[in-house]
Image (cartoon, rainbow, N blue to C red; front, side):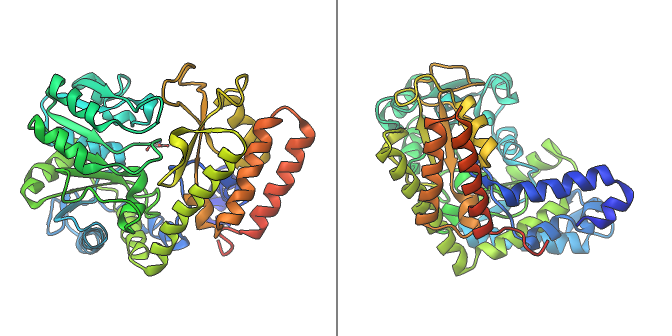
Length: 416
Ligand code: DSN
């Protein structure tokens, strides 16, 4: 594998091959991750990486863009079919860059953003003080109800009426429940603010009809393209035609230079795959699998935030069941066995965000490997075993063996 890289650079070839093996031999449950197809990998590794194509299809600043144009048009057309948007920009390098495109287009420095607190499941680029958004704009944040784990939309609307934001942001990184975009829109409408719906985590669920869509509801819909939608890495912005002339120049030249055409090729290929019936079945299974895992956790006495899930992720608050175990220690013990997930803050967090009280468990990558509810329930039981005996070598050894067997039963990237 990676023979040509190896001839030039054995150290990098070893790392690349090592990463493929790591993905094959562990169970990825970081909710923002997935395993794209070999076709998407090939498109991302194509010669389009060499091409400068500043501008948009048919209006480039460089010669030789006919294939770049073709690929970008295909990505745009397929995105329009998947999400039903009037206008699509596939050039953002990431979900954060997509959000930056909207902020640059619609806000002035000092304008006001109302968004969900990161500790309650928000995103960094929704106004966190360490991010450019927190440093450029005036930000206030809403929270989920700590008792129920759900967003309180009445409270959100009252907050909007008090703060009078220029933009209200919905869409989250650790919120297991369906987002009621129309209720966020109502809050934004009440104060004449824009509504940005960041569907980074749930792009695939929305495309497949497994989650309600904000397209046609929110003014702007952003996302990343490599999570549940399982396409090439990067970001996307969707909006109505009326905002096209604001958004496109804000992405290029406003916030970015040349588009990453090889990634846009990966987006086009992944979007084509997502237009299939197989993808609809995949997205439904992602959600069924998350529900099955949540049930195992709840039956085991763990506190599942909000009592369950409607999406691809489950958030577990360890404080009641495992008061002496931090999310960080749990994450490390899991990783030793090949269970790869992340420590996460939980509503009403009482520990540091660097070593929070919860774990976040996602099903997109397990489902890509072919797992159904029975298989992910087995994985969920292994997670419970590690939580209960995280410092017991015999338990960790046994779980490692079971993870190895599951990886063999659900192989990945066999033809690479
Ligand atoms: N880093 C991503 C996540 O894990 O949720 C944010 O998109």
